[in-house]
Structures are given as C-alpha cells and as structure tokens.
Image (cartoon, rainbow, N blue to C red):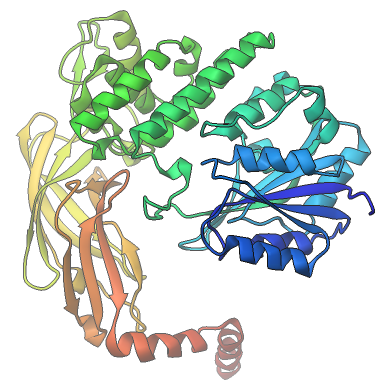
Length: 552
C-alpha cells in the first residue's frame, strides 16, 4: 500500500448523524494522499454501522472501535496514533469539519521548513444563527515560524489540538500523547507541545471549522459547555495544576505569569458570567475549589486583567458570595457598581466600605474606571428593574432603579427614555427618574412593545430595551438589567395588522437583560414574509432602482 502523507483521526462517540459530514470534509481535501482513521469510543448508537459504510466507500478510511467507552477524547486519539501510517498527524472531532485545503496548506508549511508542528486559523460557526468568526484572530494574522513558545507566550490561549498538524517523529521523540482519564486534555497536550517544540509554523489560512452550539441542552452539551457542573470546575483546575508542574519540570517556569493570565482571562472568565445565576451552595463549592488555586497565581497575571474582572476575583477570594453575583452581573459590558466608597485620600473602592487588607485595596480600587471624569456618553451607570408587572396584551409596567456612583447626574428629577428598536424606527418611551438618595434614582415606565413600528413583513428576532439619559445636550444609552428569573409573558398581538407572538422574558445569560422576542404568526408568517423575501433580492432591488432612476 502507498504510504499516506498525513493521517487524520476523526474521533466519534454516539454521533452517527454528523460523522458522515466530518468524513466527507476529509474525502474532499485537495491533498488526496491521506489516511482517515475513525476512532470510535465504543458508541452505542448507529455510529459503527455508519463508520463501516464510510470505510467501504473509500479505501483511505479505516475504522477503529475501542473495546469500551473511555469517557473522553484522549483514548481514541491515542489508539489512532498507534496505528497511523503517515509521518504527519491531524485530529478532527466528528461534529466539525476541515476546510478543503487544510491538509494541503499545513503540509506545505512542514515541507517548506522542518518544524515540529504547523498550525492555522480556526473558523467558528454558530449553529443557532450561522455567524462566523475566527478563533483568536490576532494570533494567526500573519505567517511566521517561531523558535519555541517563549517567542510569543500569547499562543497559550490557542490551546486547540485540532488546529495543528504534528510531525509524528516529534510526538514519538517526546513520548507525547493525550492524557487519558481527564477532561480538558487539549490544554495539557497543547501546553506540552508548545513547550517541547523547537520550532513551529503558523499560517493565517483557515484549517479547521468549529461548530458551536452555545445553547445546547445541558445533557448533550460539550465538556466546555457543562460549566454548571462542579466537577467541571475541578477538572479544569486539575489540568491547570498539571500544566504548572510541566512548566517547572521542563525548565520553563518563566512562562508561568503568561499561563496564569491565560487561565484568568479565558478559563476563569468562562465561569464568571454564569456566577449571578448560581445558588449559595454552588458558589461555596466553586470558591472552595477555585480559591486555593488562585492563591498560587502570579500577582502580575491579576494586574493584566480589566478592573471589573479583578473585582469579581477578589470578592470570590474574600468569600463575599452576594458581592460576587453583583459584580459579575454585566461583565464585558459598561455596567457600574451599585455603590462606591472613598477613603480619606479620595480613592474610590468597590462596595460599601473601604477594604481592610492590602490585596483587597489593590484589587477593589476603582480609580482606573474614571467614574467621575469619563465623557458622559461613556459614563458608567447601572439600570436595574426592581419591579415588573404585566399589563394588557404585551404591555409592562417597569420600576427602574438607576445607580450613578460617579455622581454624574445633577440633584433632582431626571428625564429618561426607554429605547426599543424591533424595526428600523426606534420607539422611545419617556419617563422620569426621581432621586432616592445621592447617586440613586428610581422611576416607573409603561412599555408596550406593540407601539413599536414594524416593517411591512413583520419582525422576527430579539431586542433588549435600553435606558437613555441626557445631560447638557449629550446622550447616554445603557443596558437594562432584569430580575434573573421571572415567568415569561407571552401574548399574541397585531400591531398595524401584522400578527406576532411577543414574549417578554429574562435573558437567561450574562448580563441578564430584559429580553423581548417577536415571532410572526398567521398571515404575516405564511404570506407577507415570503413575498417580501422574494421581492427584497439584489436583482429586484437593482431593477427597481434603474426604473425609478429612468423615470426621474
């Protein structure tokens, strides 16, 4: 048999429906001299029959079934490495694909210069809306060859094993295999590959298509999306400790701050947005697992984080679980704290009192947020719904409390507006915010989504109302935080004769905004929308423009 140039292993477990798509992406590779190994982790569905049928269709496909389920990705990958015949190896998950030129491009980079592995860009595709993005684009923007990870420690953020093509000799020389019996095996394997490689080449071309299902059912979600499990937290921290030990053993302890920053900015941050939704028991267990590890991290790693993230981390380390929920609400968005306290020197700190320890004063110091001096359009406010009462149809009466810790608003009542834009025209509902105490205002507003003007074909989608403030001719728009849980309110309405089902609900994820969903129904869905879609095509629009131009 001809020796293949590259062996690509597709790991699969109970994924008979998507396995053919993954294998088809390999059979369509522009570089044809490849070996395809299907590594089946003892599936109990139709995967074996599907895999055997795929192997019968193409002599390049081999089927490897593990005698029992390993519960992870490592064992099927390792067993495939054992039988792989090619000098270069790649890995693919059964729910993803390789772009047509992935093998060709990565192999060409190997042949251009002898390196231990090559890597390229990963395209992420949201399954729910089709949105495409590039994973860590700043790391793969240009073609380059690095003599080791120390040349660019930021690459520790790119911990996917599937975006790379490895020289078999490199893996064998260092006895490098995927760690079995643990989750987040890619992080340890990639850290070891980075640390052991004498040289590796990065190309900017897409070499992997990663399908993301952010709202998959928890029972079927990927390991990374099972953050609701405390065991998931323990697994992630365990892998970090193994990486730390590897850095010391391999003489690369100097990378520790970069690696710690990656953990805080990526791994911890993945949990942080969910913290407002967790109960006390879960948060207490989370702190029990996380805090001992946080105490081992380099101070410099904390200092590189945005201030809101540092506040959440410090409150967790102090055991202030209510504070954690409050501070984590709106991470990644311009949301102010509810309260700020200044010391005798005027330094502002998060919360109701001045911190008592040196570390807490360092981490909770909000000076760099510039609460008092930012331009008004980017000032930090916090708008929360404290009471929500349904009215007739889809109408709501909201009690809104606005926190102004920088005291940017003058004393006295404030004019405000609630903004909603389901179509091209914005609905603005004016209301008044009355002072409760310095820096805190409250008002009541009646919101009726049916008053928003919709396009002729109706509107299908989700919108989040915003609060608008004005001061001396300047405007500020900020998001509106809803109660984290309340019964969804649904009504069928016909604004302007266009029938819709409108649902008002909590957002259900960070930051937890008030969410309004429109769904066309009846004639609007069956007739108007299909007709407008046919008319609203580029050729039709261009023809209409030509006709109107000729008639002028």
